[in-house]
Structure formats: C-alpha cells, structure tokens
Length: 143
Image 1 (spheres, helix red, strand yellow):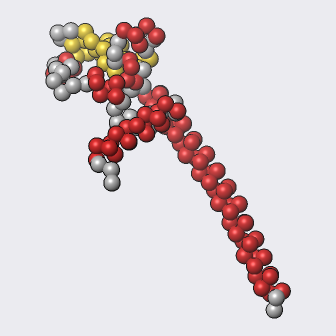
Image 2 (cartoon, rainbow, N blue to C red; image 1 turned 135 degrees about the vertical axis):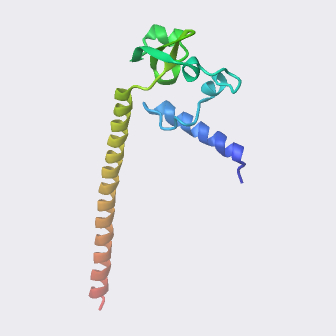
Image 3 (cartoon, rainbow, N blue to C red; image 1 turned 90 degrees about the vertical axis):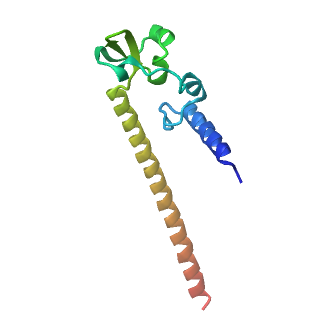
C-alpha cells in the first residue's frame, strides 16, 4: 500500500506530465517543483497586502524581455505593475481573456470526448443488438 507522501509525489508527477502535453494547466493547485523552491514561509508579505497601493499598469501579457527580467511572469505569463507607498513592484496576475479561452478549450474537449463516447456506445449497442437477434434466430431455427 502506498504511503501518503508517495501518493502526493505520484499526483504531482502525473500533473506535471499532463501539463507538459497540454496547452492549459489543469493541475494548477499543485505547484511545480520550481514553484515550490521559489516560495518560502519566511518570505515577507508583499507591499500590496500590507499597505495602500495603486495599479499603474493593468494586467498585460509579458514580453520576451519581461519574462527574463521579472520572476512574476513565469507563473501566469501576465504581469501587473503596482505602486505602493514605499516601493514600486510587479505582481503576477491572471488575464480574463486567457482564462475564458482556457475555459472554452476545456468545454470543447469535454464536448468532443462526450460525442466520441456517445458514438462508441451507439456502435456497441448495435453490435450487441445484432448478436442478441442472431442468437434468438438460431434458437428459433433449432426448434
């Protein structure tokens, strides 16, 4: 029987494999190994959680340059510029358009899988009906 730690490790591994082969992350609640190493309990809270702030630049996609400069771009691919009273920072954000696109991709995949399995069920049902009909015909012929 697997231990709890082994099950968690297996789940993270499977989600990582899934994320590599799909364009959207289903397992976003489970942090990747690289994300786990960057977060720590001892890190200070960001300024927007402690004090008043204003948003200088709304949530926008990161450019190639920003992806190399700002660590915040690696999590979602979008960044928001925030001005606190003490300093000027960037924070990771989620784009509404991107989330909507992910949702519709997911819905499309679900509908496609549903249609495929409905077709498989119809063919299987026809096959089973044909077999049952042949069996009844053979039983009637043998009488």
